[in-house]
Amino acid sequence: MTGTDPAAHGAPLAPGGPGAPAVSGTTRLYAVLGDPVSQVQAPAMLNPLFARLGTDAVLVPVHVRPGDLDVTVPGLQRVRNLDGLLITVPHKADCLRFADEISPAARLSGSANALRRGPDGRWHADNFDGVGFVRGLRAAGHRPGTATVCVAGAGGAGSAIAVALLLAGARVTVWDTDTARVERLVDRLAPTWPGRVHAADGPVDADIAVNATPLGLRPDDPLPFTPGRLRPGTLVADIVMKPRRTALLAAAEACGLPVHPGAPMLAEQLALYREFFALGDAAGPAAEAAAAGGEPAPAAVGA
Picture 1 (cartoon, one colour):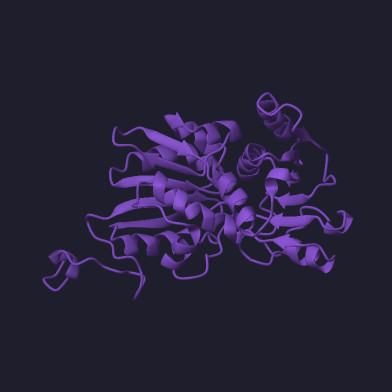
Picture 2: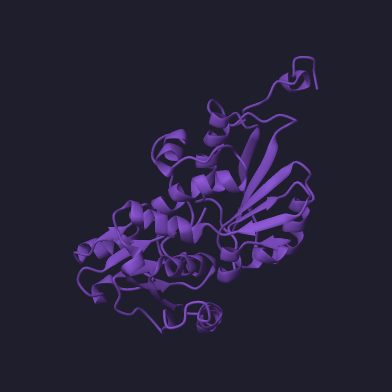
């Protein structure tokens, strides 16, 4: 380093230009893990929040292939200035095994979308996808607690959403192209909610039809289900957040069906992340969105 290097004098650098998080030798690290991560926008919400709170921290995307989790996650957990991980597709179920303590929601869903290091060095896992989704529905004026809901996808996000819907009082049917995964989920949930959770081979009539799969992230993805086959008045919800108006939602609107986009699920999770990572007094999602710069940023499924 030269004598004019600002880092040599303790001045934090903002490598992304104006408005980017300042990073110094004291900065705490957070990472969001996924495959892919190019579409993930959780950093666009959390980094402005860190700045507003005066928290010396930064959240960065980390692209990890499924076969590399066994090396990457334990390695990150050994990084002494890394305090937490957000988990997105397709790692939510697989990352649960890296936690020392698991919340009831994460245990029931069999997946995690957030891990944090405790003061004792132990790692705690939770999953906020489901509660964020249900809160988003309620904020939009819907009543999931009295609804029948058909969920497409029994992966990490779909499992968490099924759990939260059941906790809210809904009757839930889950289907997935991986029938064994659906059966495992229903077998796990049925003892707690007998008669209220079922498996199916495909979409069934319901008040709310949910896409909890990654289908829709890529322009050439097929639709997860055909809205034209749903009964009139079915609310079509998509947890894919980028693009905001997914092909599924566009097709549903063309059929005259009401729709619910994915962005509210992330906006509703921001206060939960604040509490989980002890980032200050949690505020409501509207305040969180404003702190992050206005509109909730689009993001990947669950992150």
